Image 1 (spheres, rainbow, N blue to C red):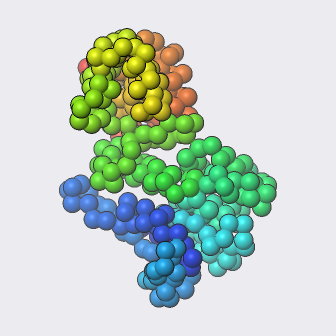
Image 2 (tube, rainbow, N blue to C red):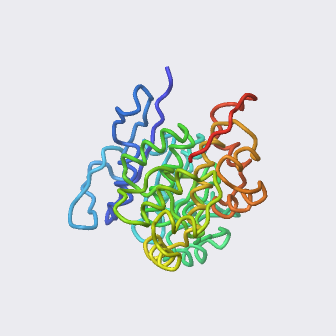
Image 3 (spheres, helix red, strand yellow):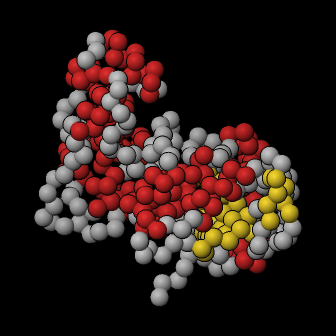
Amino acid sequence: MEKTHVVAVLAFDAMAPFELGVVVEVFGLSRPELGDLPWYELRVCAEEPGRDLRAVGGFTVRAEFGLDALAAADTVIVPGVAEAGAEVSPALVEALLRAHARGARLVSICSGAFALAATGLLEGRRATTHWRYARALGERHPGVEVDPDVLYVDNGDVLTSAGSAAGIDLCLYLVRADHGAAVANAVARRFVVPPHREGGQAQFIEAAVGEVGPEDDGVTQSMNWALRHLRTPLSVPALARAARMSERSYLRHFTRRNGVSPMRWVIAQRVAASLPLLESGEGTVDEVAAAVGFDSTATYRHHFNRQMRTTPTAYRKTFTRVPAHPGWSRRTAG
């Protein structure tokens, strides 16, 4: 019988409840939609179990488990610390080190990076935290390479994420690493979160290459049309025609609505469409690039690396669940 993966999350006095709620939502809810797939067992832990802990907003939380349960978990998540830059409890540091020594995966969200840094496990390694705390983390722990410009950093045994919503990205990344893309995407759908975010942020969450919404305006019509035709050559004039708008008007409305230019959006969708093909383990990188509409493999690799902060080959190695099959037939999202 497969052993249940235990996730422990730290609760503490004066905590912001959002990050704790993210962990509970991802790892603590039952998942009947996933059938018989064994799900995680979540344990909310505190240094003093059974005590009422104040949460921002005027309510209290009581954790059932203590630091011994945290040290015994398979994944330990620290969603914050009481005060960024303050001394981290020696008892918490000891529990984190005990968990790590057992082979547990240590994870932080937002200011929780201060707790992981206090263990010494981030020395000489890259890490991130909320941009507000990045300088303080670097000053308190000068041996840590603090990168404030990414959603999360995966060092294998220790993972850190930026503030609040970036914790969603990292939790989904953990699910994806444990169970594959289909399961992570099912959790994301139930979470009702945006499938992909641009902006110099490395993330491994599949963009939903499908309908973007009801076709009640020209821009939406053009986006849905583009998603059905990703493999074909796409241009601003073609998208404007699909929207039944002039090119000038289309560019203005599209950029105002989406925050990026039409062709930058198309590139992002093509990269997103390539992810399940890479994860399937089928076909060469050249074939995947052609299947989603890139005119050359070099162009595909360039945009993939820029968007995902890794290479298609490295991504495939990380997330392949099914070995490649020589009889692969080219598929596309559009």
